[in-house]
Amino acid sequence: MMKHIFTGLLLLILTGSAFAQYNQRPNYGFRLGLTASPTIGWAKPETGKSNGVNLGFSYGLLADFNFAENYSFSTGLTITTINGRTTEINPSPYATGVTEPTAYDLKYMLQYVEIPFTLKLKTDKVEGMRWYGQFGLSNDFNIGARQDVELNGKSVAKDIGVKKDINFYRAGLIIGGGVEYDVARSTSVAAGLTFNNGFTDISDDKNRSVRNHYLGITLGVFF
Image (cartoon, rainbow, N blue to C red):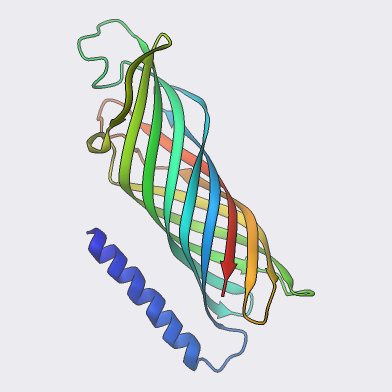
């Protein structure tokens, strides 16, 4: 499945690039860029509570398909880490055999291949600078999952692999905004904020539900 995802995205980018080369409208076209962005992540269980935020990181490719002067279909391919802490009651498999409600402190350390599908709306360019707003869907595919577990302040498990306990697909709602600034004829830098609100359950445990979210400080360069 991952092979099909990468192949499909590559074909999409190559198609856009070919379209841009033969497009006669000067304001339209295709742009490819790089991003490296810190993230602030957290997790929220249905039974229990969020227990603070943790830093993560996102890096990879960005792509804008400009179908009108101030409108773009924006996508990309990034490796995104979403970390977060929770306090949950009798989480499996750590509470196996426990009969009384017991609170465990969990730290989720999850890594995804992220492919966003968003609409980017831009202002007119003034002195090489324009503002943008962004809205769309995040499609994330889990490639790594580790966890720390504590009970009453004492470690139960440390940095253990829990990939089999995490759902492969995660969907999120993307809302963001920022600014782009031209630094050369065909090169611009971008900076902004992106909120990714996860709305699918990340836990494979049918007895509990957990969702994770992150705020990203978006930094990028378009060529």
